[in-house]
Length: 103
Image 1 (tube, rainbow, N blue to C red):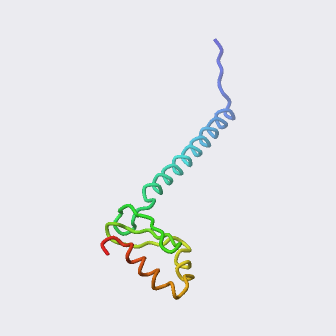
Image 2 (cartoon, one colour):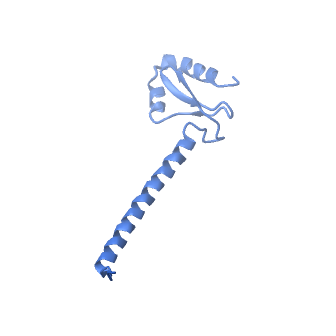
Image 3 (cartoon, rainbow, N blue to C red):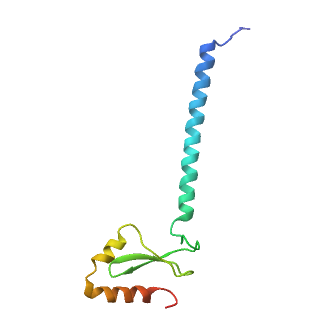
């Protein structure tokens, strides 16, 4: 029978290895939790939580909530609306309002 006693350096080495593995696993789990949380809120109305319905009106996609009738724009969509010719603005707004549920 051999009396093998690991050296202090070996103990420290394996302790550091374990700490690095735990740190990496924790970071992976945190990233997975964050991704799951984002998926849970994707295309949900920020006001009431219902599923948003994407509707295209005059080449501008808007997100409409069928429950609270909220209208949500993604980044850049407001600028697209501003670029609609003034003569077409009334028609765009009419179509936008006509597309809302309950109108």
